[in-house]
Image (tube, rainbow, N blue to C red; front, side, top):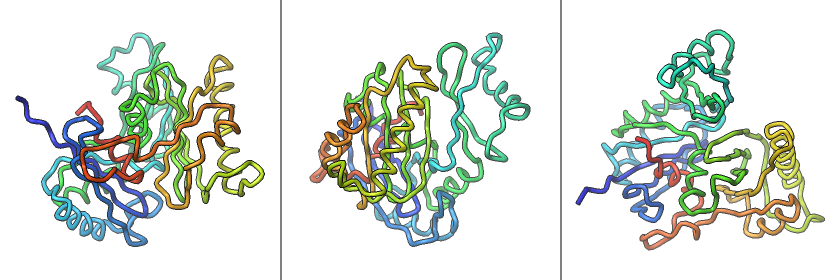
Length: 308
């Protein structure tokens, strides 16, 4: 019988580092998870501001979590992810796409990073979705992990991990047009998937103290969030889909104590006219004694990555 591979994933933000260990790619086969709060100033706005301190913390985490020398996957900070749909000429063969993109980036495809690292996702009609990030940003995280005794083998983006969670639990089908909304204390991340591919990613900075009640009682943060979501719905239907399709499902996830989504589904469904589902720990039962917390769900989605 083949040995099941332990898959370890790590998720960073300005406040904490979190990990999940899974046997294979079964969302229910979680063997361990954990979270370590970070002192202020170690990571700032997604950038590693103090690599020595982060490395020291990761060394302690690796020992406490018993993952030293493990291969790990980690997330690229959302603020440093760039997506764009790119037309590929018909004469360009599949094995030539990356070299073609290198030439395009140098000539006519400006990116917000001086030295980008990139990959792509094939779409239809000779199009690809370019996914790029800052090589320096990714390298800082990878180097801190290596110096902590871990083996970084893949960097990924949180929207893909979010969608893997939906796929693992049958919450979304390829025919759906799914809006994924990640609500955090100081930002809201939105991404749209169709045919199992990301078509749109956007980050909104702000303050999100949310505990949804009746429409008459919406606070300013809730009104701002609803306004931005409504704009995304409109943009997707009339600009991306040119009126031919719209969002069919909205899925919410939060890792913040300042965001209370317990009553969000019926309230937002009524406000936006689209079915809404909030991801919760109970959607991902494990064989462990306690459920995996919402704060670790994105790391779980990363552990479900199957292509490496």
